[in-house]
Length: 246
Image (cartoon, rainbow, N blue to C red):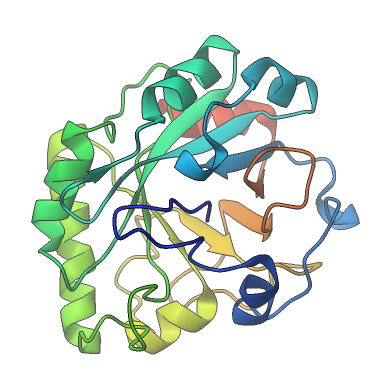
């Protein structure tokens, strides 16, 4: 996922080489041949600053996720330019939240997210809110010191609050390794949460427990033609619009 340098004054959470190793694959310069016909998209954060959205669209961007918030206080200072600018360029866009589960409750972080950009409306141009769940960038404990049952409870609390405030369940961004280890292979979310899978390889590979298919696949960590990380939607353009419309 595209990283910010803030709120804790860090460098990119995972460098290109480290990200490849962490996600168990090889960074790709191009879309995997087996998925070349699927709608292409990307995700951005303050690391990309002001994005040239018309150029992104000309390079094939059909959708984008923009980082809105992290934990319970951080807000992306470039959010308005990125979120509104992508829509104005005709790109379907949505907002995501980077979860830091050891800092505050799922409900608290969901509230902060929705208040600061994580909203949704059934206009066919707004993707459902998304939550980024992955290795802890601020310490050695990749699961943020939470037990598996507490992590599942945190995710459920976040999801319930997003659903209450927006009418949509959040898309879950994660890796198979993190999910299976930190939630204990929980199957509690696969039936009603779209999966945004991160794996930098020529194929999506094994999915996290509970899901039988991916909705979006982040297949490259930033070496592609679009700013930020490279993604695919698992369907047609018409299906992408229906997914956005709810």
